[in-house]
Image 1 (tube, helix red, strand yellow):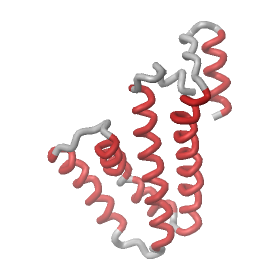
Image 2 (cartoon, rainbow, N blue to C red; image 1 turned 45 degrees about the vertical axis):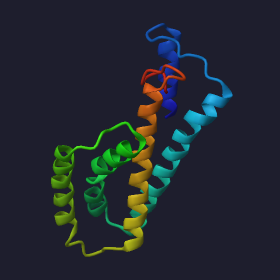
Image 3 (cartoon, one colour; image 1 turned 180 degrees about the horizontal axis):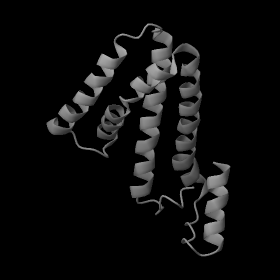
Length: 145
């Protein structure tokens, strides 16, 4: 993250990208802070899951992420529910469930921690999308860095 921030500052200084708009403390607290907090929670819970579950099982659980992102997007209004999308995502989730069904070192606590990490990541991604599309401030993906 430090490298990304430094590279973005250099790009702005050399005029390669437009200078991001000024953000007030209120807008920062309302939009940027929750995204940062969710990112920290995602990292914390995602790393904590490795204490309880093997890496291969966690990777299978992460295959459910597109479904969770879609569900959170539908709840927060960035996506619209459609049967076609749900069927496509159900096939992916079914494959992940079949692959995970035979896990020998299954621990419920680890699965709960990983699912919480996935929900946190999905919420963060949706909030970033809302921030980039929002009317309060106009940010590009690069200027969010």
